[in-house]
Image: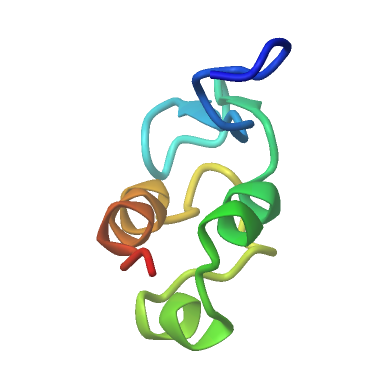
Length: 75
């Protein structure tokens, strides 16, 4: 590996914790859009998965976003 280069690529951090449908006590760190961009998830895939970025944290389908990120096909 070349000097000064990291063994891991730059990553986007996203952490969301709380109880679905409970407005209070949600903790979110990072931006879903940054993760979507990093993984190259298309707007069509988001729509098909029922993901709307303007949904409040407590009803946002965090599991669906994680599944889309895990299913991305790399070139």
